Length: 377
Image 1 (tube, rainbow, N blue to C red):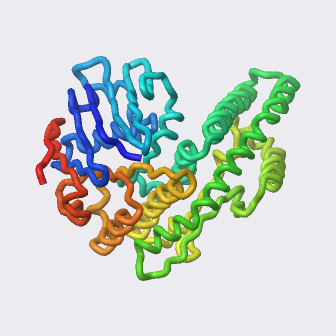
Image 2: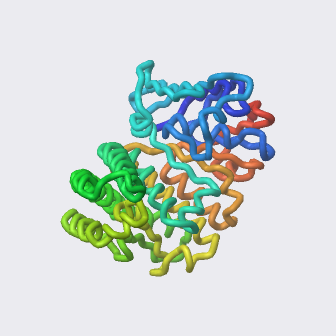
Image 3: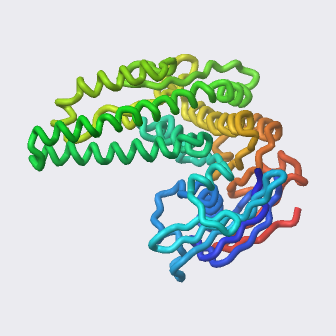
């Protein structure tokens, strides 16, 4: 899968830019604050339907306009697709080949993988970012995931509102229990389904993760694993029946606490995903450099998984992360990317890294104050 062409109108600090891309490596370089990451964000929006940065629709639109459009032509042999995103203050509208479509369909048509400095939060911070990492990948890799994730969060929101209103005294006890029991008949199957999807994904991606990490740490043989944690218990080996039994029992145990807190305390929104490095929790036992290599390996594993299972290579977006790697890790990363050959878009303040790929495989674009100039190599 490759992006051949990108057109940006009234997006962030860009008025109108048209870019033609190389099939392998495309670098956006220049000083900080010129708009390099804005171009990556445009590609990410077109491929995922949402931004990887805190953003409202209003902030995506250039201050001098009331609308923005992003358009791209992508090629996946033998097909070519034209994708367009129109943004106004009221909505976002996607099209594929002139027909309206959804963000979920876009993500499946053109999968992408992003690595940014903020990605370190997946290892260092709380479980929410790790859950989001897995759910984001599920949305682009599993046909059933979107309905399950959306359905669960809609049911969770309704359940939380019920608990909150009951705590405020807005429901008689008999009415509350009748509604709660009815709601749980939908909530529990959705919670089980989402948990099972996550566990299946983690088990499936583990071989790719080990291969990617050992490649980055070559010639060391690094022991890496993952775990899915439910109520402080390892659940990676659980099947549907054990997941359902555990969640059902926990719902009964936590009823009083849920009523007192006015919120749902049981379900996949409370689960954790742990990365284990040499058998230890990477949050506490890895250096920052090791954490950086670990999450980069997760991103590489996503690409390998897509290629192995779906026969599609996602595009890789690297936002100012290569300068964070030491020379050895950079060399191993280049060798790895040369082997799997995804189309790459990266930002940098300098041009040294792309030369490692060979000049014939690189297109460079200098970014200055929202203006793009292609560099002759």
